[in-house]
Image (cartoon, rainbow, N blue to C red; front, side, top):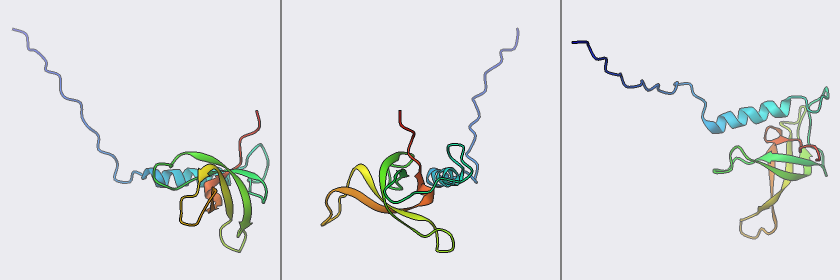
Length: 119
């Protein structure tokens, strides 16, 4: 009688101990995107007061999504600490006590990117 080969179960590969958590990976990707030149320019994009930007919010359930925002003010950069922008996020309402209207928050440049080009 011929020997019958029994299929072996597939091996499970355990994730590497050095796997990057999704939140940390998103932060690294955002930082790299903010540091990279955009639109073929030689300089990296930076937020400017009155301009538009997209912001990646760090809140649970919102990771990986980018939201349209208006830049209200900018601080830092250079030797004055990290570049940060105070933004008003379109379509998201503030939910704190005494707050009304659209969500306004400070975010580092690592969480910001330029808006997409117009259609």
